[in-house]
Image 1: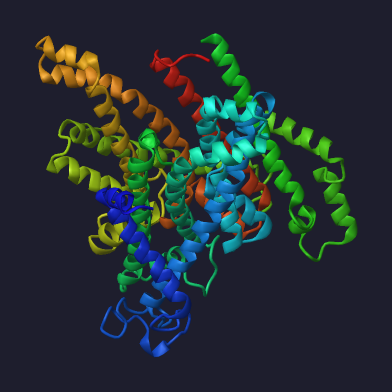
Image 2: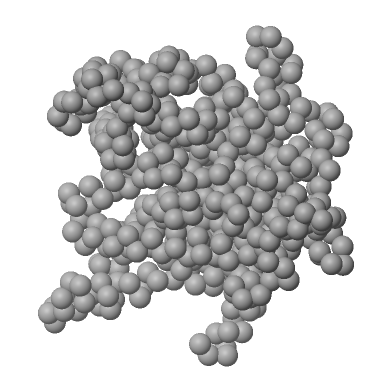
Length: 283
Length: 314
């Protein structure tokens, strides 16, 4: 990327704020793999319910675990869930959307109807179904959120690539004998990539919200592992006396989602202004 | 319009059949034997065989599906293993919480978002507009269940204005029932308001830039008439669509919020059913919510095209 393009990106206030918030969350997540001030799962019964102080910046919970370390570790969890869920959604969504746009007719109709069905199951419903079969856990929640993402990317891929198939350069590529797979790889995908990146950023934020919700319900990350949603669940009965337990994990979720949303908004303004009115869908 | 309606209805039916197949397939792939789950580990092979026969589990899958669909056709979702009553009755009894909750949440969302979005569009790039946009960004980032926890902390734990959870029946104490769902509805509605505020703003801005608005102004019409009679009425059409689409999402959002506030609604029912391994109830509720979402999306789509004649009936 040239310095001029970088300057253009950072001139967008949404992008700049979103980029730095997201970068902070990602760096915190990476750092927490090798370092946290305390072991996030280590109980210390002599330090239970300590309010935020110089030793424990965000206080301690009912088992004396350091809240700051757990919030740090929770960011890794959210990033992994977001990455995997968006990758599942993008991988299958792009494949199905490309097939629908390429074959049109019955194949298109069948793929779109399957998308409608999946669209009828928001992440929390898919997770409930999957959990009722396979039991709760982070893998199952990633799968549920990923499945929820598939129709979103399938519809976007189909809608954006349909018009590109009609362009002159694609017709020329066909005329010189390029294979269909080659055309999709060399001409279609690069042209819809910006839309996919923008949507991917927004879906990443939605995945973090969904994971937090599922972990809050006990269907996602299981104890003792740190997850922002799980921490809020554990804090709820204790918040009358230890309000900090219910505040900091929630702030972390809101900050991560805010950063990604701003990043997505900024990227959309810069890369794909036509998408500016696509609305978000919650879990 | 008729041809379009017929096509959309056909698509709706196909989607609903696929939804039912998906949920039925889940029943088929569940590890373990539903009869064993119902009777427990001490059941004898004879009683298990008898129950499997009663439940029709010893028949071919296709026959089981047809029988399942036949029962669905008359609204029979099966029986709860735990409560031993029809699942349909269970769901209906819980809807006295979920339906008022989602309606109230939507009312809050509309009451907050439409005036804010309109104000924001009319005062574009001024302090008020920036403030509202910051509010909507925060609303999009805050999970509804955390908003609910904060509302409990402030209004229930600190101020004691509202109950922190639980529900009193509408028949026994309607005022207390309403107070029980106010905070959950506000937390659900707050997040929706953020989406709708952005939508109202962008829709109003688009309409305010149209030629007919310029014409109305150049005719010398008062600004109030231009904004509310010409612009607002057209700008609100796409917002109504989003409101419709959100109604389905609200049902899913209610699953988490009902658990935050311990409300005995459909969401709490499905969550309890997971804990009790009451799989027919899980499937019944998931089928019910998915069907509501698909039907609401269908009605919204048709209503949008009806309200906005510029959309072609393809």
